[in-house]
Length: 562
Image (cartoon, rainbow, N blue to C red; front, side):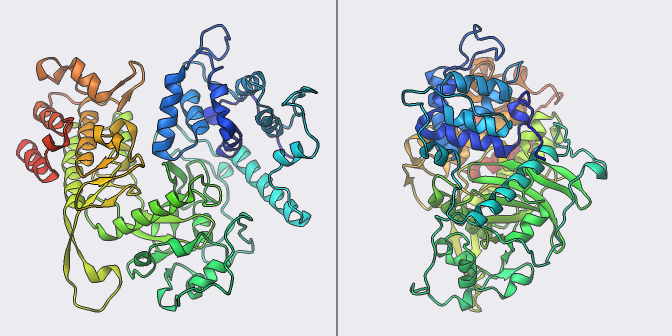
């Protein structure tokens, strides 16, 4: 018997699967705007005034372009976590009914195991026999057996995610749980799974008549029994479009190819919350514009972080996901540094591309600042380490032969990279607070100014020229300046209460260049803070040519802090 979801559950506590179903419907014809226009300041009081305006809608659309997330998902994130009274599924249901978005209302009714709300008998919203049923059941298939199996799998996953979710606290520290509350990982690592992975019917099917090159020399190393699988065999398993995976990735002898089934197993089927299993921390630890990040224990590599890119058959822009995968893997393959997260390997044999890196157990800088954990010494180390990591990214050398496994004599080649998305959430900390840059999905190999029509990075950290498409390493410098302000003040990059960017807020409240009144109270008598703030101001110059290079930044920091 399927347990009913409580309609009074807060949206922020509702599991990912049902919320995504609602968001998918609201994306059609931008119906999320209808919902947003009806949201009141007090969810329990229709007369409390509207919470959002057209400018807020525009900001959500801009953020969606930046992150690749759906507008409805961003709205749920913002609305679900703001205000003293948090919206519930019941409140969302009433707003959707008021907006007459009947398809979304039908989805909520299905989630709650309730009858579908009545529709008008006339007009555009009136049900149309056959069409309405088709819209409400996108998984209809002429093969009824396959349909039943898919529905069983979906219901099993939904029951697990809704009813077996372990309790976790709000801190980044993992809450210890009793064995009775922890889902049991059934599959064993390396054993052949009896469950056949399904893929969407609209995935490209490769014909034997296609003129595919000989991939026999390009077989990637695998972590388990899949070691005998060739690339054509992976294609037969309906994996993502491997023909678009960069050859330097597939040919690398420095990367391990992991079975997607194994990654499913160690992350408890990509469980959407973090819990403690018998192997250690397991489940989702973060998310980004291109996918979700999970942690799990691998018998050969210990705790690993698995970044699962959005499933290519459901992603709005699959080409973007593949480009981000190629960019991140190639960047991490070429960039080896103490202050950069080490890559272990990847997976391309499942419905979604995956990147596997070493697990950095201390959480992100963003999380640690929010938790008020960092003292002066730790912040100084984070500043210096992050700067050194970016200096290496901006100007480094690599062994040409290491990229392709050639036996030829190695030669050195200059590389000029930019990270493209420097922010506190992308700076991970070890248990000893050593910073490690991660998330190189926006990274570019540049030797000159690049112009792009695709907005890069994160809005709150973006340099002015980035909004118009001019991309250089100086964008990283600007973003680093925002991170410096976060470390100095303990404030978030966007101050929601005053509706200001941290840069503008500090400028307005820092009298005569004196930052002392805005310093994080957790750090007492930070003597070098004034000099660090002076460097931040230089990094945040509006004209990119007035910003220092990372070499100069590191020299200044070494003189100030060491």
